[in-house]
Image 1 (spheres, rainbow, N blue to C red):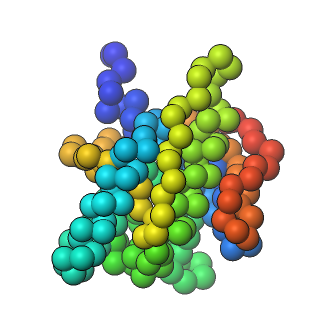
Image 2 (spheres, rainbow, N blue to C red):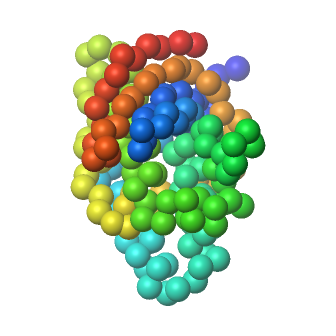
Length: 179
């Protein structure tokens, strides 16, 4: 059976990100993150700003949930000790917005995952274009940054580790590929 675009875009990799002194295990979609351009990031930010100005909280919550789910498949952050991980989906947009109202955590995770994905590229492959500067509210964007199709189940491909300093600027730790 030939590989489809949807299947290729559903491949996930894993990285560990230290955020505020705590490790977060994140499963992310490397091709979606690597495909994010500066123009897409600016458009997503504009979309979020427009929604915030309109004051439609329910739409903002759905947008935030879809945004997280577009680039991140899963993580190990829970609402309470020993509880299940908070799902990264549209239905949990309110929780994600409460957890990260300025988008700093999402931004830190996206930059760390992008760094891990770039490190994992085969030698000789040119680096992707830079993601661009993204400012508060810190939500990367594009002309249509959210998937219009329901993504297929993630396919786990690799594991990486990234460390973020207290300034939330990515710096790397040892990385290894599994799969």
